[in-house]
Length: 248
Image (tube, rainbow, N blue to C red; front, side, top):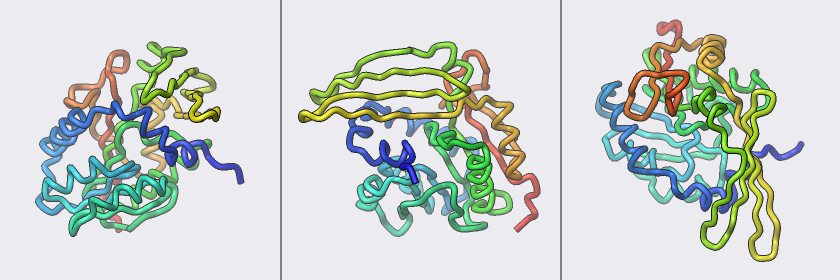
């Protein structure tokens, strides 16, 4: 079976080098705003799906919540486990498979960690697993890109030099998929990685949620939780809950 692009890329040290600019302060503001809006009770159980190296799961645990972090990358989970404590644990896991049932008060999927798979069925299955993992009144938060704005402002090519490595990045939007090819050389070797994200808009995501038994009940357009505008918003943030909260 051919290795999927995200398994190879997310487990590479070059992925973390390229995206080291991700703003932790912005992420903390987003999490604080979500907590203020959702008002989770003390000790609530939370899942950070696709947690990477665990920084945001650690931040949430420091707020007094019981947090689990999952990621498909073994190296990221190995790194994250240095932060584990009684209220924080990490596991290597593929989100297309179930993980704990009827357990979490809130499940988060941050920073466009969805839309990576080849088929719609895989994405629906992922959402079904999320539904299974939620308690009856649990909430799912999906932080996704705003596909309309990305398509409008897509930068075809650019270069970034970090730690002496020049990354050449080529972006395209083809057949409803935002594709990014990343090529560079290091220590005499040439590397090429790719990223692929489905350009799902609000209509499609709402339909996928419904197919999995989740209802979209709130949307936001940025990390300050302003209203979503399809043309101008930086993000598409969806809050979902079980369509039948009495189940399970």
